[in-house]
Length: 172
Ligand SMILES: Cc1cc2nc3c(=O)[nH]c(=O)nc-3n(C[C@H](O)[C@H](O)[C@H](O)COP(=O)(O)O)c2cc1C
Image 1 (tube, protein in one colour):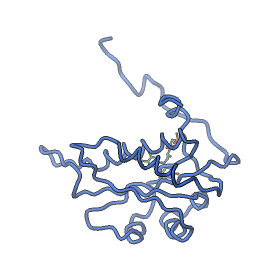
Image 2 (cartoon, helix red, strand yellow):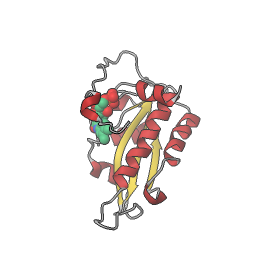
Image 3 (cartoon, helix red, strand yellow):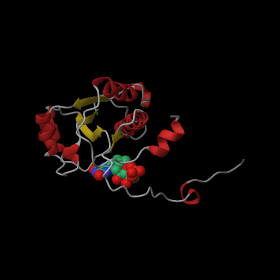
Image 4 (cartoon, helix red, strand yellow):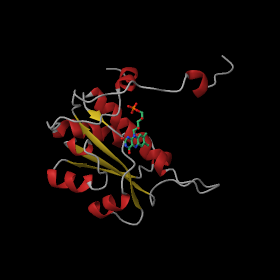
């Protein structure tokens, strides 16, 4: 699968089979995050991959959706605002930008490996903070369930704004 195919094929998977992906495949996905670019190469992140049913059950308290509980593995992407680059002229913190890139690398690598993922940001951060014992500068940015897509999921067709609305090309 090339990058174009992975981009086209990736979708939010919201129902998983119980079969657990191998540890090796999860390491491959985490490597895609580790190699991602970040502002001033600060790499202000840590990624936790959880597969034990006890841990997943506690994490699901942060995002109470039945489909989320079907995920055999959840990756939690955590930013460290003490490490991230803050732009000099206005102090803008680039942690969110950095984490978004790394997380999306993971979704694409997972797609290539035949695994489904979903970005989840609508969670209770206080539950995740407590569960992971995060420090003051640390912030959970996204939960990423990962596993094999259950084929019985009803999937809506991809809808996107048209090219004319989204980009402008000049000077070619
Ligand atoms: C930053 C971000 C946060 C998201 N949070 C959630 C979420 O909390 N729950 C959820 O079900 N989907 C979430 N999504 C998935 C989007 O709804 C989904 O990507 C979008 O509808 C496009 O569908 P697709 O991923 O299947 O292409 C999130 C996506 C992004 C990029």
